Image 1 (cartoon, rainbow, N blue to C red):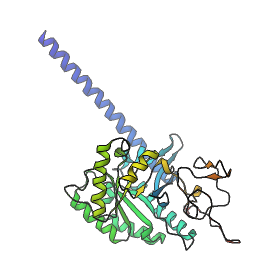
Image 2: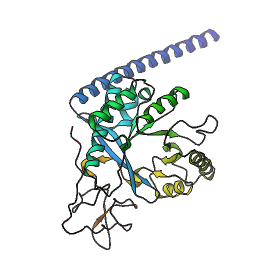
Image 3: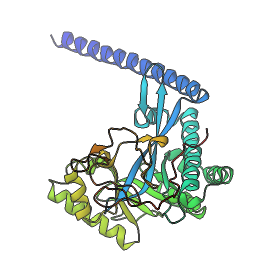
Image 4: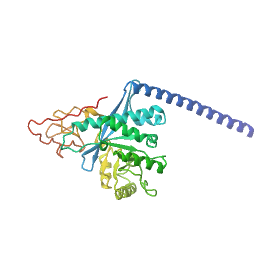
Length: 334
């Protein structure tokens, strides 16, 4: 009986090992196919940037974040968090990320050219692969992209996830990037970040969306995040939060001192030519789910308190002088 049980156990182990090997082979094949399809799509310009607003405590847009979307003919529209983590260590992953950075620079310059001179510039933020952040040649790439596009460095912000990176090396690389004049945000941080080892050299930190979900109900979590915010402010850093999907979350994060908020509560990522909130209002805003109808005026307005520069706090348009030209946002050239 014992020998029979042992033989059965060995057979079960062999069966699990065989199933794991088949799964690993399928995963490898799938990743290889994904890599090949992504490389082909990059050549065919099937990637685009969509931009999500980042608002301050008053609800004014102070920056936008560029998100890469893959317009795949068979898979449909894929967000970067669906495909880029699987390609991050592959050559095509780096190629996509660097294409996205250059495209974000071009779009930032296009918006800057359209900006009325009496309005505050709106920077464009974009995530950086960890391998790029640690690459000694990445600073040269960033400097070259800034020079080629002509965008002011102050209009570009880089978001870097520090997970798994050697802190001293990452700090050195971030200092190199800041010396170029771009903004640097340390992304996806939690309550204990900077508690013992200190903060990385940056302009801001952003709380990971994992900690945002229960913040309106979990007092202990809110208290821990408040301590994080206080530590960051003591070092002169701004604090943002990603993944803010509900008004209650936004209120709780403002209460603990967050400076910038971003998430579906304030608008989903949208193509550049759909956006106009960083400039004067357009006479006829495009029909979009980002608008709702004001029950009093019957006019479209942006929901949940997000307003364009040049709008009153109640959502109405500020007066435009007679004969004044109303600028529009143009997508950056390919």
